[in-house]
Amino acid sequence: MDLTKQQLLAGKYIIGIDPAKAKHQAVIIDPSGLQIGKSFASDVTYEGYTQTLWKKVTLLIPNCKLNVGRLAESTFYMG
Image 1 (cartoon, rainbow, N blue to C red):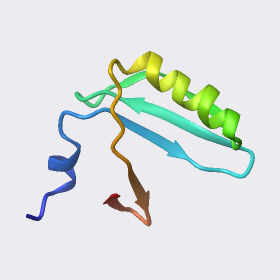
Image 2: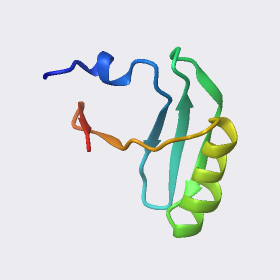
Image 3: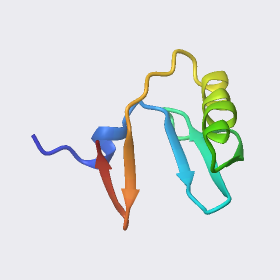
Image 4: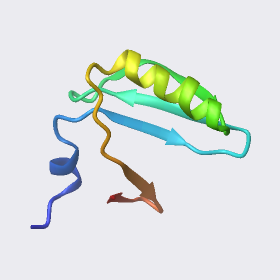
């Protein structure tokens, strides 16, 4: 079955992460397409990942279940 990007993302929270060398910038989008809170930065360390990124995600998204996807060269991949 070949699903479109819209079908894959419909009804889901989206966590957008812009990677960088020192700090990643992240934003959370709700199932209706609205941004939740402000974007935020996290250090490129284990602590930045666990203490900043996922702590913020679990506070803003109730009952967060992880489904990983990535955007590369303007193409969305689910993996």
